[in-house]
Image (cartoon, helix red, strand yellow):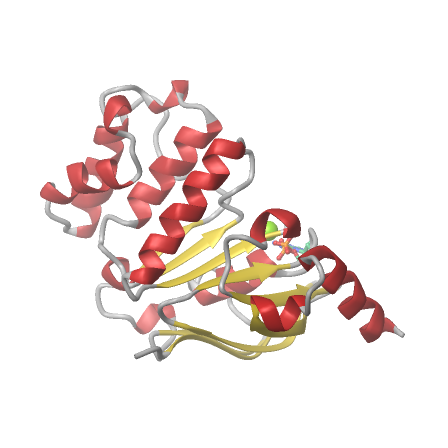
Length: 237
Ligand SMILES: Nc1ncnc2c1ncn2[C@@H]1O[C@H](COP(=O)(O)OP(=O)(O)O)[C@@H](O)[C@H]1O
Ligand SMILES: [Mg+2]
């Protein structure tokens, strides 16, 4: 059964003179890949940072599994996240980085080989991450996010810098996780790339919700880019 796993309710975030997110309300349900789409500066990262308790909203709320992130019991086992900043140590190998993260979160080291296999980084297990390509770094970030075997994954622009193979791999990866019943919220400004990946779409522009629905409802036979342009033109008209 699908259920609401992420809920933005009248979320707002005002930075000094920028209203990054404005009265933003939306729901994300389980068992689906939801694309959180909008141009650069639309407010995607700010909304996701509010959701993960890294930014304090100036209004409204962003709830995950029914509560604010800060109130979750064992959050790493409930929510895995990949944000644009990479939190791993360049001088350590992939496996050592995972050990550091697992220790900090009280996760059994047996998970390390499981997640390395999951992201297909087995061959790079003992390589220092400073020699990693961007695609390998993205995979390691995903491995870290999966350490706690979370039912919810929040990915901020994970396709950035990936080559076509990496993009296809990422698509299959998130599709499989959603098929297991997990909730995947993945942001991107690359609409063309996302239209084959996501089941549901949540479009944000200038901090506001533009549209939300299944990919077919939003596209209406158009490309996602065309649909986005039509929807934003309609709003500003
Ligand atoms: N820490 C910050 N301080 C001030 N302004 C910020 C900060 N973070 C983001 N912004 C501004 O908020 C708006 C939304 O940014 P962001 O959430 O990063 O959008 P997106 O992830 O969709 O590209 C932009 O105008 C950006 O410049
Ligand atoms: Mg961003």
